[in-house]
Amino acid sequence: MSIAVKVLSIGTVLVTFLFHSTASAQERERRSPPRKLTAHQAEVAAANYQKYCALCHGKDREGHANDHAPSLRSKSLMESGIAHQVLRPMQYGRKGTAMGGYLDEVGGPMTLDETWDLTYWLFEQAGYDRLKFSTNPVLGDVKRGEQVYQQQCANCHGVKGEGVNAPALMNQSALAHNTDEFIRHAIVNGRQDTPMQAYKDKLSEEDIDNITAFLRSKSLGWKAEKPILRALPEPADYIVNKDGDDPNFDLKDGMYVLSSDLNDALVAKKRMVLLDTRVTSVWQTAHIEGSIPFPYYADLDETVRGIPKDVQIVAYCSCPRAAADYTINKLRDRGYTRTAVLWEGIFGWMHQGFPVQRGEIEGVND
Ligand code: HEC
Ligand code: HEC
Image 1 (cartoon, helix red, strand yellow):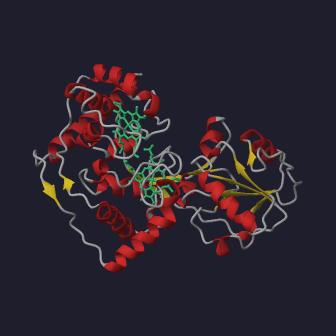
Image 2 (spheres, protein in one colour; image 1 turned 90 degrees about the horizontal axis):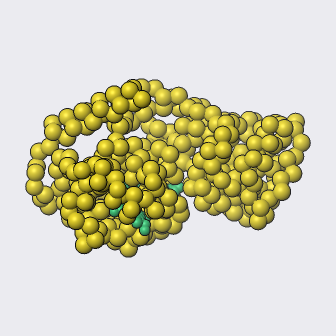
Image 3 (tube, rainbow, N blue to C red; image 1 turned 45 degrees about the vertical axis):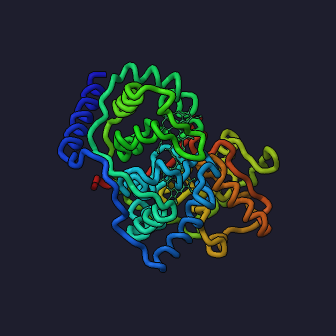
């Protein structure tokens, strides 16, 4: 208890210090993006968007195609502050949500330049002038903020800000990237064409400040972690329990296997191929042992080589099924009929206490 309190207060001091040392412009001023993409960069960024992001954020950036991924074109988001608010989630992801990191440094598929270009492409597509927010803290009554939060916000964002059908507002990586004014701007204006309404006429200015201060009080600090990247499995290692029997799953809706059934089959050393269909960086962070990185955006002609057709394939993701469904449907079209999707996804699997293999972290930058 006392340790937790201490960590919290150090975090708060650090955050406050950062805010004061970097706070420069108090006033909001309009500014345009510093980087104009060339036609070629824009073309690559548009293709990367469709390949990597459309599955959840939608073909037209409208959001909510899967797993309540936010809109990436709402005015209030795209006019909000600095490029890092889009860049950082894209690079490092939001731990514990379906949003994984796409930067090569953490095991993702995109280079640093590609992540920058995609960020500016999103700004250009949305076409709004960006507001400049100060990094000053928004001050308020944390207790009162918590009460209003629980009444007005918890049914979508979760009692602990874990996200139910809306973003996880108390997620540490989100709190690290979202400044107080960014959060307040979202509450005041809502997010256009999404379930997030504007609260400017529904709550007093003080209460909006109070909620913002309450959310900030949950921030413990966050650092970008640099994983030690594992070698990817070779085709010879794709099948787990090569000499085992077939698991003979009883599939729900002809498609889904429950975590408990998959775990039983692994314990009983049944023969299977496990596909982790998430962005590859999160396979590096934690995966079901024996699974191979098989991201939803991979070129199937490349990746299916080495996977025999007679073996039971089980795919999983964290969204909780979107990427796995997508991949398995493509495999079924290619004649892989012995295929299934893990019903609860890997977060459900972990919540039930089943084991995962975790990656190592190297130390810290940024
Ligand atoms: C009906 C469900 C619902 C309620 C109630 C709701 N929200 Fe939201 N909220 C959402 C959704 C959905 C999004 C994501 C919208 C998008 O961009 O697509 C969101 C986005 C946000 C964001 C932006 C997060 C980010 O990282 O960009 C903030 C901040 C926020 N909500 C705060 C609140 C607060 C504070 C309340 C209560 C006063 C509240 N919301 C009530 C559904 C809700
Ligand atoms: C598997 C689904 C999925 C994919 C694929 C995905 N995202 Fe996300 N993304 C999410 C979810 C879910 C969230 C919200 C997480 C939370 O905060 O609870 C999110 C949040 C974000 C945010 C923060 C938005 C905000 O309102 O604060 C950005 C920016 C973002 N994603 C960009 C991208 C980009 C760019 C790509 C492609 C390179 C991508 N995402 C791919 C699911 C996905």
